[in-house]
Image (cartoon, rainbow, N blue to C red):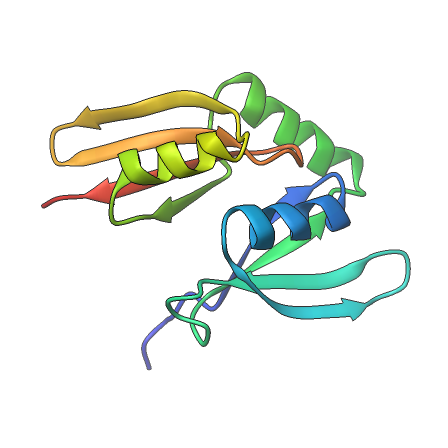
Length: 131
């Protein structure tokens, strides 16, 4: 038996805004959007791997979730990391769409990263490993 990552999450302060940002701006595909009472089970997937790992846009309804995400942002720590083929090209594309970056493309050895604000309470790191 091999462990696989099938689902991970980011806490978001607005599920509708998060779904729009992750699909319309970043380019993920909506996989599930299921009502679950006061919130919804919303997942997105990579267009390059629609049957791959899902990202759950989890509402930060619990005070600890809000404190956790606020602490990460205050310390400049990304809540999620996404691989891209070309960090500079994604930075240029997303900047043109009005996305706010807290870190411009930076190369550190074989890794290039940039960090953006997802508009829903998180920082997200784009990364490319050239190793």
